[in-house]
Image 1 (spheres, helix red, strand yellow):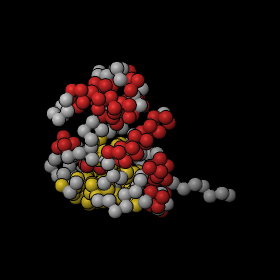
Image 2: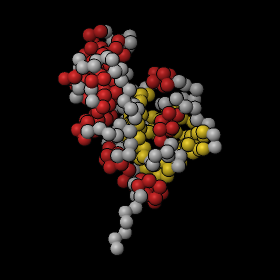
Image 3: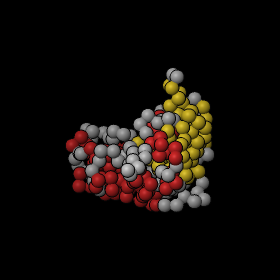
Length: 249
């Protein structure tokens, strides 16, 4: 993927957030270009999920500004941002556990007034095929494995054809085959739907391989931002997150 010359779809400018005396996010600035993938790495407690919560409208920043498609997001609720094209997945997959896989997609599609029932059903099934869950269409979501629920959650984010998707640890604890499917789906969503992604993950090699740009947070601040291969070589990233191999004796 190449985001060279692409316009910024999401801009994070000087964002900060404190909880009491603790600075969880400190003067963070970077952007996500249109039709691109940005990987967000950093040690536990470095402010990654807090930053996603700010971008998603769950938390308000104490300082700084976020712009989505050129519009400031200050004061907008998560539902408002969803209407502007922002979607999100979570560390623990969020699906309607008492509904079938098909219903998880079909029901929200019915709320889109432009879609007739037959078209909504077709779109829901196409999304199940896309993530490889078509054989489980009639299974209740609670009966799916954790990895399958993660795939279903991903499919749910695509229902509204979002412009950008925030993903929080999508590869954590899933079978390698599920991870490969997620990576394929992310790449194809960028190329086919024109969406962008901001992905938090500890799976650094995977992010390096799939991201156009990468940002590393250490103690709430940006330690490095740029091309993935360059970011993982930065001294601050190695010292603050990746660690150093022991020198041979």
